[in-house]
Length: 152
Image (cartoon, rainbow, N blue to C red; front, side, top):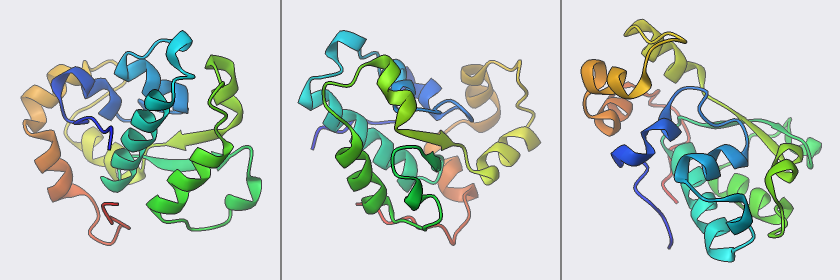
């Protein structure tokens, strides 16, 4: 497995509400360059990162562009990652990612952070440090208990 610790301080922006809308956003937050996007290892790292974000219930699919028939289905994390892997041509570059899938932040995460004082102008890293502290623990304690949280 080529996963990273999404809670590492250097990846904190990845966890900001509305911080990821497209696969390219994950690349950006992990510091992977466009000319490195075709490397198979990078694809695996990105898919593992998306899987982690989905498992922690802080990312969800908003719309499948290349597979619109999936928009009306409730998929498991494993099924989402499998479909992403299938539609993702490893030669894809920056503009190609806008035609694959659109991600959103679940309402619970947006609402809970707003309740703590997060606004559009708040510095996310300072907010986490001063208002949340241990983000992983906070997510575990605050996310809905009925989510499909099957760490796969």
